[in-house]
Length: 495
Image (cartoon, rainbow, N blue to C red; front, side):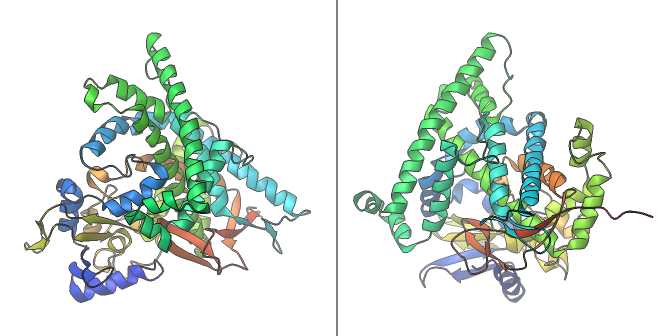
């Protein structure tokens, strides 16, 4: 559904039909079960997760880009991968990565400052010089930032994409993702899901780009896995196990410590985790940041309050001490702003599941809903996050202060994060949600005190569900962009 209308449409359906309903999807015979029911959702995504896997169609669509990593895997394969990967996202591991977040966030801030200064005399094609300030595609720069961060934090690999876009792996992954997003929902791509031989027998330009990009990612990724494995073995021999703090090194260490060989991940599975980390660690987080900035442009009072809250904990915007970094990470209002934005615009708008066998789904009213094998189950995160019977009549308004005192119904709602379905729940919930939250906080802490963000005077921002809920500008529905007008922030002088 159109994300500009679907949350309110879902609310209308809930008010008219209740928490559970059946709808027709792709045709009359495609009957789907749609639920906003916390009991049903807890069952489907929680204790009965193996009975409701992701449909093979959506898994094949994603696996064409990133392989059969954690984002795609189901059943025993997923449990093996999750068990090995989870320790890499522990609180101790994430604290060790915090300096990377702040360092790259500061580099983004400095890059934008340089662009702003240069634009005063030399406007470029990419960046339009406004009457006062600079219009910048923040979607592009946020993606470069999160890509750089996941490279360093994920497997100690420097893309340097904030400085230039010449890195071979960066180019390959960018081309693969951009092409995959554009090509992923065409008629031909849908046919290829059902008939994979089409792409092999009749390859087109898009298929060749994805194929060649995947070969580059695989080649360089295999070298990264080999290098990190050698480093982990070397550290272990010197009695320094755990010295490497990047996610891949921790994953390899946990994999080596797995006593049962049948539960260990193969080198090929380790390689797919690199593609998964690049996809989930860069794309989803940059999209979340983009929508946060967009909402802050629409709510300048919230933006200013956030700016004052952050600057109250730091002595200089140029560099932050470890103590200041920790203080920023602990700011309640910063946390509230992020959660409120993730509530209103979750990067992943929904999840689709399919019943592996006939089943009966429990509901809040004590009854059960019969689901036949092969029937789709649709859980809309965006709709559950904006239920008026949970959040009140202002459920669609951007109000970070609501998180200071959550409604009772929100406190008991399902979700990995209290009150949010954005990160899902159960065994398929996002293992890196804390990583994403810390990364977002670091970027906002660098940008908000340094710049004011306003709507571009020439571009109307729209949203569309293209694998994720992405921003688009004007009538361009091909290239995901978020042009914003930025100005260096100057605090009002007190007299």
